[in-house]
Structures are given as C-alpha cells and as structure tokens.
Length: 168
Image (cartoon, rainbow, N blue to C red; front, side):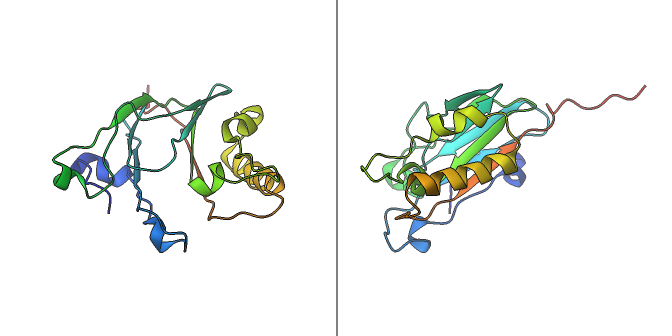
C-alpha cells in the first residue's frame, strides 16, 4: 500500500500493485501516486520507485523526475523519513504518460534500452488512445516481439483547466 494522501486528494489518487504480485522477476515493491485536483491546473506526484512519468504538453515531452528522493513505500516510518510530493503544471490539453519498467527496460536486438521519450515525441499531441496504440506497436517492433517483463502504460489527459464554468 502506498503512503496515505491527505483526505481531499484520496479520490483522485491511484496506486499500482506491488511488482512482486505481477511478475516472477520479483524486486522491491514500488509505488507511484498522482493527484489531479479538479480546481487547479496542477498535478501532484509522489514517486517511490516507478520510472518517472512523461508530461506531454504543447508538443513537448518532459520527464518528471522527482525533485527530492522519497523512501520506498512503507519504509518511511522505519527510516524516520517523509515522502516528497512534487507539484507541476498540468493544463488543459496536457497528457501524463505513466509506464512500468517493462517499457523503459525493453531492449532491441543489440541490447539497447527502448528510448521512450524519443519514440513518443513525434506523436506527443495525439489522443490518448492513439498514443497507447502507437506505443504498444512500436515497443513490440523495437523489441522484436519479445518483452522480458510486464509492460503497462496509462495516459491521463486533462480536458479542462479546472476553472469553474460561468453562466450568464
């Protein structure tokens, strides 16, 4: 289980199951949470082990590395340490691409890791379904149809800026 969110953010958060429950190549469980408030054009991000998400905004692709390290989930109490939450702009039309390490660690025949940001950049303004379909096909082609780990992708697309609509 991921560390708890403040009560107001719980509804918009999600957590990933421990990797050990999904793969026989078990490694320490990881956690990633996102919160997209309805009343502000921001994204709150807590990462405890997953690869950094990609922010697709205005045709650009930006890796959202954590600005401060957070301990692996459920260890903050043992380490007497807290979790760090980053806040980044997330405006209408932006997309957030979340993925497992099975995507970023897929390799081609020469052993070169899949360059996710470079491969997604040409279609960064596409609709979420198009992004996922393209990425899936491209990843399999890159890895010669042989993935050695689970691979999952999620695209979150902001359709409004959170500003309440005004009626006149």
